[in-house]
Image (cartoon, rainbow, N blue to C red; front, side):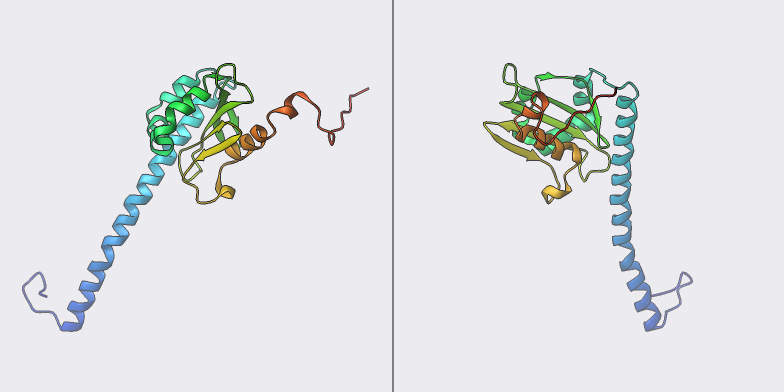
Length: 181
């Protein structure tokens, strides 16, 4: 190796310069990955801000059509997206649940039989997690490696779906009601 003036560098200095130069490429790649993650997080936080400003918003169609949400739904759910959307056909307002924007519902005339959920969370490994309840089975679509890493939004929806929604209509035996006097 030579200096900018053209002089030869001693072998040890030249070797050290090559090691330093070789070590910079992974750091730059990591920085790019960090920048991408920060951009995704900022985008998700903007979605949270936009859709939680008015609690109980009924424009879940708009949320599902947001470019970042739509792209992640396609990536995470893939070919099951039409089934998920069918199972979300009858739905209420957007909920803000456990740090996520939550859209849940059921297929027409199939409450308790066919359901679905989409959770948008800037703190999850993926912007979107989703699940389908069909024929007594729940299929989860997420990038999390383990069940325990799923958002509360998805896990609590699974608990509700597994109860076949009975606890919404019938008081569980371990629940005591106390009314003020």
